[in-house]
Amino acid sequence: GAAVLSLQPAGASENGGAASVAAAGEDSLQASAYRAILRAQQFDGAFDLGGLPGGAGAAAGLPPLLLEGLSRAWGGASSGGTAGRAVAHTAVALAALSSQFASLQSSWTLVAAKARAWLA
Image (cartoon, rainbow, N blue to C red):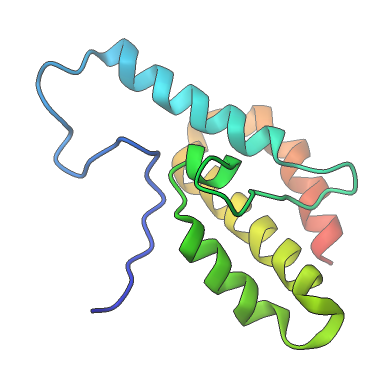
């Protein structure tokens, strides 16, 4: 089957989860995912979401295999794929911020501007 890109935080489900999940718990998961993405930005503006199951990407609900596939697709044969990895991780981080955390845009606008400048 085809791989489906889901930008939901880890632990989130499309049906809203069990009724016993408190709103505070969901907010905590969202806050953890948000902080994981922001902490993954490097000094130059690029993002490194990690390639391990415990990396920032996984904490934000982004599967490591997805990140690896995108890195290979953008990497080509040049520079050992490092540039492609940084481009892929930065693009995914920007997409996750705008799709999952649009309500917090005023707090990540400068982060996104620095990432876009790095991509340019």
